[in-house]
Image 1 (cartoon, helix red, strand yellow):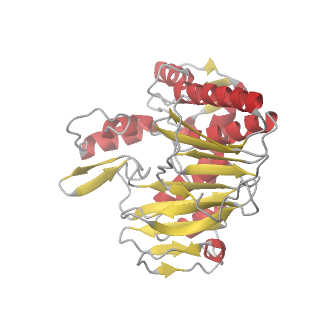
Image 2: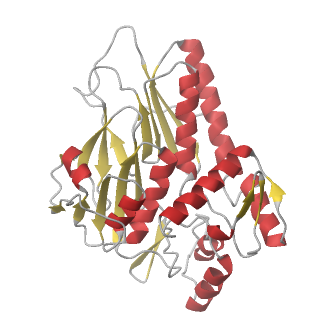
Image 3: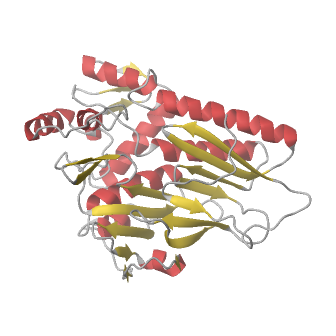
Length: 354
């Protein structure tokens, strides 16, 4: 467990500057940092007392270790065991937690029209985005992409019967990277509530959710990162129970012949998305917001508004490949401007499913 007092966040910044947090002689803001699931997880909450604080921090660390072990397809955990069973042509019994997460992932994939696709683990591996240890990463051939994509089938090929999970599609490899952080954030907030902590912010590498409000009278404030430059695109205030999640092409990528190749793959082409730099969404369910950010990122300029509507996302921001910003009306209404030199296109609020 590593302590941290510096906020180094990927997709968003937590605004704890003077005027945002006001001291209270009877309350203490706890800030703790863990490294898990390949990113820094920052936890901030108002302490209910030393004993409850220490107990909560121990449970948070245990929860994070469980998530990074059991829900990561390239670790020796439950999801890897399930993927091996699918590759071998048989089903297995899984935990209630994994079964529930897989059911939610499949439902969100269907709702997004397949733009959120957790069944592309073999394709992610083909591109090399499952590891950071490759010295000289190179893109796979078009033939290899096509073969792997066809064999994968997608999460709709998953068969769920209570706790028994399997698939006849042996090339299906589940990768919950687009929803597991959201589920972890949600579980951490729930366990904090069990310890009597009702004011907290959990930030998993720029993907975050809040409960209550920090010390003082103002809500939690976050800054949305500029995906290409130092600074912010804007500032949001998050109310109790809200989550803000970002998908960006700066999270896992490598440069090849002047092209940025990143881990957000288009399920239709099997290649990294080229039309979007980042998407931020606000919602009430962290796992839902996590998946929605990915779906809107993949959707692109012609489909992202309709996809947001289908997924029940009112507040969303998209940065296109040129750096131009598009906003839904709900996001425009709540985003505080930052001086970043971008043109902002406000959403009409009239999006409808296609």
